[in-house]
Image (cartoon, rainbow over all chains, first blue to last red; front, side, top):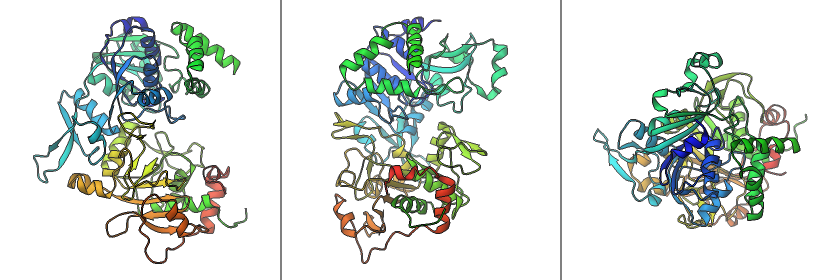
Amino acid sequence: MSVEEVVGSLHSGMTIGIGGWGSRRKPMALVRAICRSSLEDLTVVSYGGADVGLLCAYGKVARVVAPFVSLDSIPLEPHFRTARQTGTVEFTEYDESMFMFGLLAAAHRLPFLPTRAGLGSDVMRVNPELRTVRSPYAGGEELVAVPALTLDVALVHLNRADQRGNAQYLGPDPYFDDLYAKAAERCYVSCERVVDTADLLKEGPVQSLLISRSMVTGVVETPGGAHFTTCEPDYGRDEAFQKAYASAATGPETWRAFTGRYLSGDEAAYQEAVRQFREES
Amino acid sequence: MSVTVATRAEVCVVACAEAFRGDGEILAAGIGGAITVLAARLARLTFEPDLITHDGVCLLTGDVPALGESPEVVEGWLPFRDHLWLVLNGRRHVMLGAGQIDRYGNSNISCIGDWSRPKSQLLGVRGVPGNTVCCPTSYWIPRHSTRVFVPRVDMVSGIGHDRAAEAGPSAHRHHDLRRVVTDLAVLDFQSPDHSMRLASVHPGVTVDEVVSATGFPLAVTGDVPETRQPTGEELRVLREILDPGSLRDREIPA
């Protein structure tokens, strides 16, 4: 598939889970393609980073479901901040493990899962729809009943995949990409390189085969598709570019110049503009 | 290198390290910045050798590298999914930061102002709600001021003693708020109503300075002791092994 074909299969108003963590292994080529599309009113479920920020900047988002939005080396995501401070997006703010339990519940086809995380915090105040549940066992503890975070679509970026959707991570952390895939009705995998199934174990052990084809609807090869976030060991975070992204967000003029230079064309044009950015810096 | 008088940064590192004393074989996690990471590593290299420390990404280090260096020995793997499990399991003592903290130790890293349309969006609650009800928690506040020490936080991310009690036994059972270390003092919750108490002032700091930099009434009982000075060995480990580049001074200037 192409990134355009993946995005062409999506609809406005969908709930989309985005893999990775903060500014790490985000399916940015797919995110950029959504920015170029006519999609809108999306609910974005993410351990958020530049994916959430960019989609907010392009007015694609109705609601963000997240425990944080951060660029890691730059703690605060500028576009997400603006969206919150101007009231242009709704926000479902969860604790990190509440968020994980929401995905786990969806993956296991359960209506909710209980956890202590969130009790006593203002997460309960700002999400008035949250309920608690009493343990039927000894002790009768009252726990947060985290509702299933069922996704219409999951978008993840892995290092390698075969054509059928078996997908492999080669970096230090799988993040929660398999869980997003399991919590979604459809999952699209973008990857650095599509390889023959027989070659998957040439680069990593069997434990690196994170996602099975049974959970995947489509695969797209997008070299540099996580840029400017990390995609180890293929590449690290492009810190200089991330800095340029964040400083461009400080004003409408600088942001217009940034989007004009990098985001006005397709993915190939983006990668070429990034190559030129590297040559200049 | 000759051991001279400890800097404020070094006093702070040792005061943070002291938070991990007696913790044994659990993960000592410092969040962000040099001081808390140095504190966990210093505690491990001196008085708390069984502590587990990590590289800031997902490796548990078998050795104790200098700040910014990679470990030569790796003893474990802690990807985010296991980190979240560890938080809920409780075998972790974290030293968190906070944009705001109140007298019962409720903390905020989420946003400043009204949550529905904040004046300033910060990180979001991250894992702090779960952290504070499930595992030992301390705080490191590099600038002790009335901006941070407020009567009421705008969004309770980390829960303090009053909220833990109100939320019932499930929230209270593993709630274990230990201490707050700042550039001026060490604070704990060893007062009759578990409100914040001035435990010690750093050398060169007066009780009045701390009280006036705190935006709520601080429990002050009797003569407040001075935060202990680093030992010669601690200064040697800090200066020669863990932080020869003096990154600690960038966080707390001498």
